[in-house]
Image (cartoon, rainbow, N blue to C red; front, side):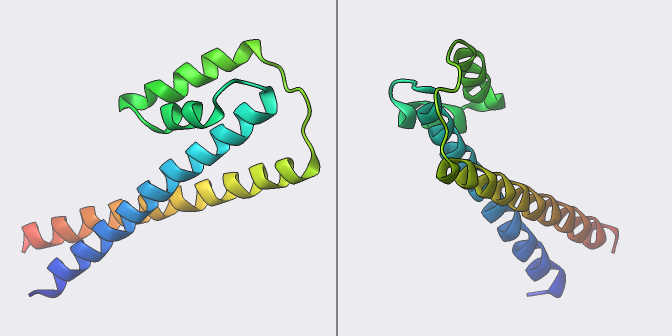
Amino acid sequence: MEVKSILAIICAAIALVGGIETVYQIYRLTVIDATIRGLKHPKLWGLLASNGNNSSGLLLYLIGRRNYPINSIDSNQKTKMIQRKKAAGISLCFMVVGILGLILSISVSISL
């Protein structure tokens, strides 16, 4: 197996891990936010927000939550949300780096 093929596989794996982690962090953030706002079935809202084509579930959640103001948030929930946001940003960086590496490795193998 060539080095370029191995590099493409590694970059694809990095992008896949970044994508899965991003979806998980969106799920957890939505569950925390729905719990804070007092929505019924926060796990269902989290599943809906993290699923769907073109992020339609996330848009539906964002539109639906407008009618529910934040009831109360304690410092524990606030720190969890901040940690989840940072983790989502890091996972997005993994996804971008993996995709860029995959594109570069494929373009180098095609040009040669």
